[in-house]
Image 1 (cartoon, helix red, strand yellow):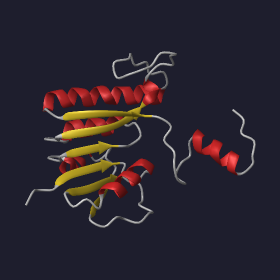
Image 2: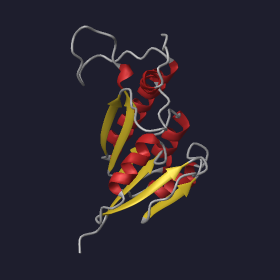
Image 3: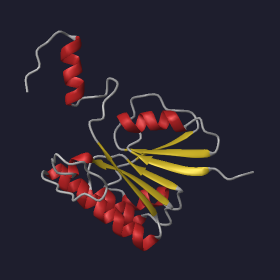
Length: 179
């Protein structure tokens, strides 16, 4: 029998994490674990291991959970300490998928691609950029595959609180939306 692939999601109870967990938890060949910080108010998925901890403050415990995993998915808000704990306490992680932001690319009339110059402007963008650099250095020195996903305007169900959700809400409720 083929061994199960271990996948750990940091931030697995947020909007994206919940959708990803829902998509993965029924797969027989996946052993899925979720690391979350705050109280879990929603239903837990069967066959999923849940670990409540502040990964930015509990680095050693985080390392015990994530070491030797096949795939670590990071969906959390920027936290340099969290990334330092992953790279400092986690070992033998085969693959890391890191959710970053498309905002790292400058405004430009030309098409942007992975080779375009990154120009973070605000603190959020600078934090994500810095975390990408820390993870890239870790991946190179630990023979870990790294996939950086630069997302933009994620929206969907009731957990959405961004501008796209606010615009749709105004339209659906016949309200004026002023920018």
